[in-house]
Amino acid sequence: MSDTLTRATGIVFDLDGTLVDSTYVHTICWWEAIAQFGHERPMAVVHHAVGMGAGHLLEHVLGDVRDPGQDAAMSAAHDALFATWHERLHPFPAARSLLNWCRDAKLTVALATSSSSRDLWAMLDVLDHPDFDVVVTTDEARGSQAGGGLLESVLDRTGLEPEDLLVVGDSVWDMRAATRIGAPALGVATGGTSAPELHEAGAELTYPDLTALQRAMQDARAEALPPGYIP
Image 1 (cartoon, rainbow, N blue to C red):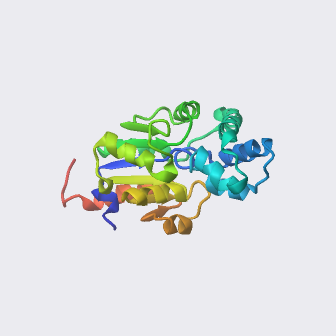
Image 2: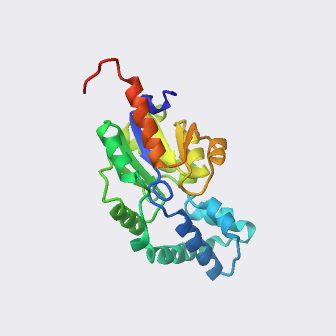
Image 3: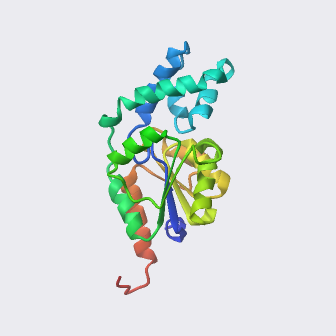
């Protein structure tokens, strides 16, 4: 068993597609928002950009035809569409139990998300408002998830070193952001990105879902305990 899961003292979770089943909803909403401004892109292209943060997403999806002056309006269109889904969103199985287990294991638990404030609060409602030590949004960070700024802000606010922090996410952008700051990345294939894609993007370990991740963390911690240990 790799010591990746036992040497860390902190863990940071992405939100969309990692804790809450919202990646495909974002895909539809971005696809519709872009179409409102006369752009047609395959949903698959949009899906693979979800998780980058609005500015990077639009640049990635639209390329040379992007008009940065329309970014704010397209983002607002996406936000309005996504808000209509708030009451229909659900957490992934084991999301709440994994967060509770991390708390019981005395890990520093952080959330890093490029979601807007309105979407953030809606999804925290879905998760029954977990007790995060740190919550970092794009507004507070020095860039979006794709640039690593969110994770740098987590390090600043927790006082942890990169090697002390497990980064859990569902997209290649999460994995690349973790690699960029030198933190171990754990990929979960819950947002539609496959384990091989996550591994290629820098994931040290990958799991099909949060249930498997929680089981692996529990098993790793149990194996690391000295013989005869009684809590």
